[in-house]
Image (cartoon, rainbow over all chains, first blue to last red):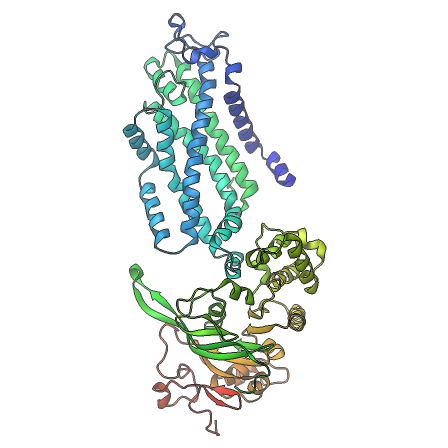
Length: 280
Length: 328
């Protein structure tokens, strides 16, 4: 393991990704202490509205006069929690389905994969918008919409990996030895396909944050005072281009977060999954 | 077959294994008869060789005996107990008695597991022994196959290919099997390694009182280790008998051309004596009557209509209509 860590440490892009994610996590955990105006998540000061960045408000203030920097820090919490729960649920649904469908070769596995393909045939964002719109705007519904539309991706990935594992001699010999399907799947197949799953999880977090921001931008996310980044950009549209900082700050936050997850995921792939080296 | 040296361990009775050939939209367009009406018996302690060209069904035979494939017809008995038949589930206790060695036994090791964990696994599956008892047993087997104890905490990629092979064998031996099926165990090895591997197989057979089924296309190896051999062609047995007898006086024209194809020091050049022309026919569309007739130098009209049964004389059986005709 130390050798792997060393290789990761030499990869500057991956380190940058890890650094960005570190900052995001710190911001999320310590938001109440780091924020200069922690009350501004809900409070408004109309007299200070739409002020340009200055010492008092690092990234300026929004239409309600709230400090954008403070709101961004609290937004990191929402972003991280939302992406973690959505991706986690998609994994919990998709990975077992992919494992079972990939291990068995019968009509059940065919049926499972056809269902997954029906979901994959529609772009995720379109399906997520439809579900979120139907359920009504709230954080929980955004998480639900993202999980329900993201699991087929994991089912497909795990299915393909499991199928190729199924042809490995050591899997066939474990079966011939009399190992139960449960034992083969959990103890032999899953550890051997963990690397691509971990790598895709990091990159998938970035993609999910982007999708969640899109839903927020369309007004399908949390209701108004919530400092959700996508919603903040949506609110800023009316005040562009004069209040340029209003859209720029959450935009950069989203950009850096997604970049962080992608660079980190690429770095993980290089050390965990050497078959799919990124082409430089 | 009354001259078996020991009581019968394994009986294969009219075993068949057919694979559906699927065409457009998964429609069944034909049947690949990988094994057809195969019968033979293996005595306890015997080493039986199964030879034939690629695609003759020898690997399918091994995997059907093992329970990896389910037979389409016929049955297999181990010590008189039926262990494989159409629709029969393989009992766990039977799996332990019958073991299959892959071409490279080392490839049967999970790359992410230590050797110790891989060696404990068969015992975890088949016994309820305590950890200490398993460990004791594993250590005994490991020293029997000649592997240093210190290697047990390593991963497969950290030891040499030859040692991986030994661990693969040890993994099979921990269960105390009665019959081991080897599938092309020496292919891809250079001759000196081949000799070491064969010597190891012989030693283990004596030490553990094992019976071997030896699937190979390498006639020299089969000749050196097997008591009896079965020659297969397109899913059927064409000749069966004592190794020495079959090599001395092969009765089936296919066996003759197969033996003639094996190079010998001081023997005739293979290219001059080789009589076997072309590829074997497509197994999903076998010739009528005798399956070998399309390549047989002795084929006559009758061969296209009569499917020859195995004709025994002195424990040496052959499936050919014409073998008794002296002039051949």
